[in-house]
Length: 119
Image (tube, rainbow, N blue to C red):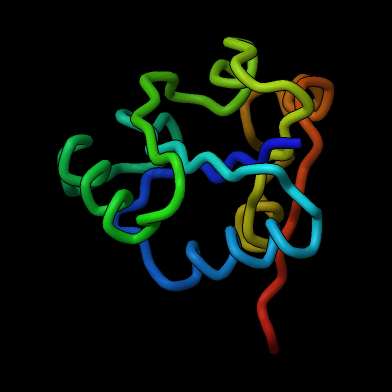
């Protein structure tokens, strides 16, 4: 299984790194790919995509960090680059999951790994 941690990463922070590390341990993932969304369809970003990509590479030095040009998760997953993907989100993002573009299709294309925070 491949974990996919996608987002705007504007900027990446310690919570993102902790989520990736915990998911790898708890779910027994073979790898985690960090996907920096070039032009997110769900939020405004401040830093350019290339800057956020470099920040992502600095935050996740031992992981594959790549830029993705799909504005929505479902479109990225439809590209079908991973076998047995687990899309990783924090509990705060999970609360908005029903409002995502085609959430049922996201669940058909990938498992969803949801991380909670202490407190």
